[in-house]
Figure (cartoon, one colour):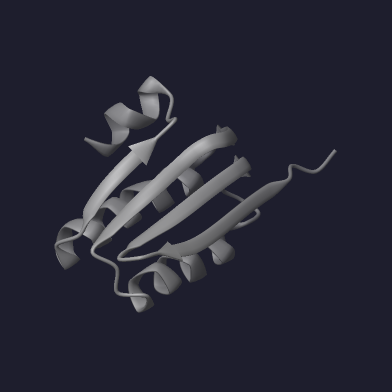
Length: 93
């Protein structure tokens, strides 16, 4: 059975909420690059990353999270992480 994945990006005021569900990573790596570009194009003040529905991360998924964190730092955005397992929280510190 092929893994399923979902990513949504929603602007709420000055914040962008990125919700991840299912498996995050390959074969969805190209979609994740587009998500990063979309988040930056919305020019938010902060980014909320909701991992409540995320069931698994591979190297591409972890790379996406690190790249999103680096984008937020570079752009001076606050990044808030919701419902992330402890290993993901440690990764993003």
